[in-house]
Amino acid sequence: MIQVKIEASEPVFILGCPRSGTSVLSWAVAAHDDFWTSAESDILHLLFGGGHLHRSFKEAYERPDGGWLFKNKVTLREFYQHLGTGIDLLFQSRAGNRRWVDATPSHTLMARELAMLFPRARFLHIVRDGRSVVSSMQSSGFDTPWSDNFKLACTTWAHYVTSGMRFQEEAPDRVLEVRNERLRSEPAEEMGRIYDFLGAEPDPRGAEFLSTKRINSSYGNEKPGDVKKVKDPDAAPKEPWTDWSKSMTREFEKQAGDVMRAVGYA
Image 1 (tube, helix red, strand yellow):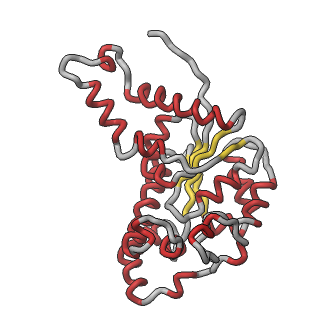
Image 2 (cartoon, rainbow, N blue to C red; image 1 turned 90 degrees about the vertical axis):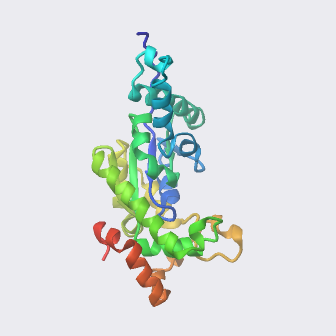
Image 3 (cartoon, rainbow, N blue to C red; image 1 turned 30 degrees about the vertical axis):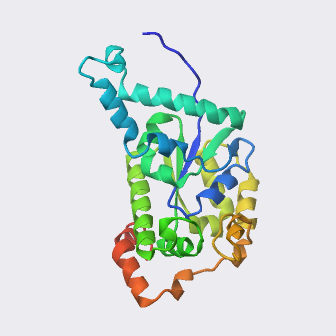
């Protein structure tokens, strides 16, 4: 068998439910000279998510007449890694000599596939109090189903967090859990822990970014485009769920209460 060797990079995937702080964490990490980030990609989930990649391999491998994958003894892991190499090279072409960071929330639902596509990747799983997430979803103004459907917002948070925690248990050496609340209260300590996990030297600029900026925030928005503006962290509401009605509180408990307790939120 001819082996073609291309050096894989060490990308960083930030996993987490939408509105949990994935974007701000990616830019905080990328404040370090060793890292680079840009907009959410979506492409990996569109190409490979939902088990599509595994089904494609299985269908091609099990052709009745014996297809190319079967005849050339291509394993599933090998198949994943070669496809990942192509995507990796594309991202590297923009990141230069820096490690690229992707914070697309939907990647949380395909973390297993990402681990096989990118065998040297590291993962940061950011978790935020579900009540804050649901409140942010409802006031985001985004054109997404969960922005105006309270029950769906609750179940979305529970689903994403459950998926992320399951992947943490499966790959503990490759995943670091990060709490949104600690990033805000102890930015220097948390960013130091993150850079250490990623094998990078300390850099105070990550903590400085967290202490001075909020991006894609759902508070202080008067016009639709305001959600993209950088905000003052001190202006963020502390407990926005205190304005919920009793029926909303009951609905959240029904849909997400068990997950809240499982991840340690009272």
